[in-house]
Length: 292
Image (cartoon, rainbow, N blue to C red; front, side, top):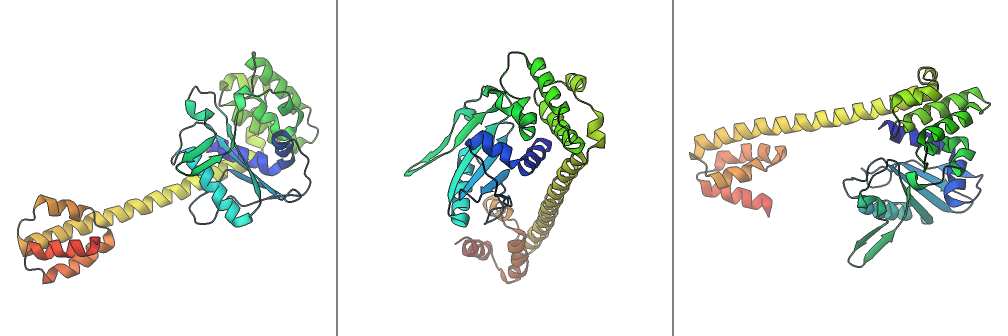
């Protein structure tokens, strides 16, 4: 979560740097679109709209290739939703951050019967670090780029960070660099070249941390609601089973399995309807009715 929030911050604060690096073009009139797409729930990591080129640059950052649903299907889904909503050219790029031998990081298309969808894939550990060292917004990613001497690269990035004149910008880039460098470097080595104090002092670190906490809290709330609903369903199921046993006697295992699959609302309806049951056949007919 911290890496996602860090990269969202970098893209939103330095969209020109990413556009210059990824599209080899200059753009001055840039709008950052909301990451929510229609027909929720779905959220993309970063959506940058180039108004002057009538083009959307859609970036997905992945620390690991594993994804549910699979990433190629997600990219197709994003494309369809974006095209429906904005009806313009869409450039999609997946940037894998952490080195891996998984074959999934080489997949750049979704293929099914009558459907093929392509997108670009960048494995950041294969990229030349030099272009990344030229722009403040890309310096944190430079720590993950190709090198024969990781320690020297980290030191080079730290030097570039130290040369940023505006203090608040320097502090924010330092924090983002430390967070992303943590994907491949040990904390002790990072501390040798970058000031740990920047973490505690930086407003952006607190912002990234708070956003992560809020998302975590929201997920916790959602999980709590789901758990509460399931607990309520289980309680209703136990009550319905007791009432059915009293009214009909022992319920066979096949019917019990079907009852286990009922939703809370269906169980509540069954609790009212079972008062009219005279035999297991009535229960079976009721189940067949709601499943048809």
